[in-house]
Image 1 (cartoon, one colour):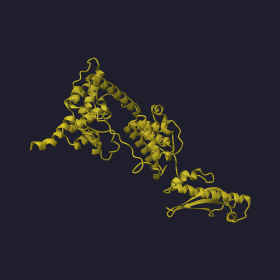
Image 2 (cartoon, helix red, strand yellow):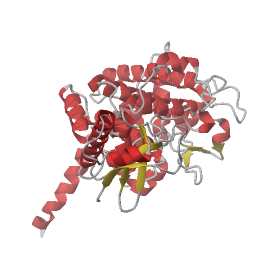
Image 3 (cartoon, one colour):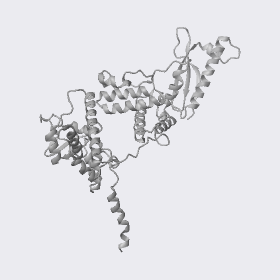
Image 4 (cartoon, helix red, strand yellow):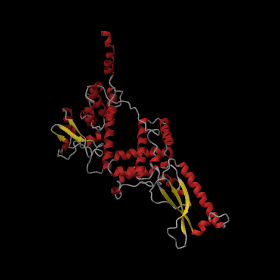
Length: 446
């Protein structure tokens, strides 16, 4: 695209000093922009700039304007493909001879609905990013805006995720400008973390959040799409090949029959909560802790995943779980005595506390469960690490190896796409592989 510059005198409106503003004009075939300089000249003086012999004052102004035009053309050459917004940000906003253009904003802003909302004091104390001051156009400025928005929406886990990502980038090269986050920067970041032993899965989480930061900055008109470093032939967010965590039938039987200490109800509760998750379609622990008695309908628990509730407002995806005898036993033993419709089935969280407090209580509860699962794992001699999440993987894999269709497993897990479900499913067990391999020898029987 051809871009042309010129210096001209805007004679549309005379000032009280009988002078007119001098402007830099930048134009393409489809658009023209005018940038105001700090200089004012009369029509006669502006015409004299073309003369050979002029006074020292006008000669100085002519040299300044010639230098401005040359610098603008050099900046345009570096800005390929040319975009006015990028040119303004990098050149106009910083040149001493030009008046800053105020039509664009360079700082992230919360949506209007959240402008007057106050952040929970607990969150401000925990997340340093909420009380920091960030320069305009920096990654910290956008990350801060996103973290605030997520907290005000009650999405505390996601807010914590973004906060952790920012800390990793800030530790790498500081709070850099968004325009400094290039493909090279992201590759260096990835290599640096790999050298420190950080998994590709974790790096993928961090860089995926940085991608969301860029999308937010483009949406808010802070940067242009030309500066976007992600995508085809640019930086690709890595995805780790996680180790499948499902238990085998034999390991699952050991867990089911594990003899808890009768004098330690906490150990028994940890085991029962894990089994409830497994029998309950691999229900996520967050969803489990928010189940209410009104979710029970004629022998089934029907609920919507908290993770996808916002995305599926128009078409909610409901998960229906048949209540097995084991699940009923666990609810009867550990369930709430108050069985009113809006009471939680498991009395772990206080719904009257703020969402940040509920998030912290949920984390502490899951941490306690995982500690006891680790103890059981060692006692049973199981080498695989058993966590609350393993119940979900075990449910999906047991169903798959039993011949259940992936489509049904997708519905049971509440996934929006089959791809997500397939990522959950572990490889077939060794016995199944041996059985399949035997099919290759059937020709011998003939």
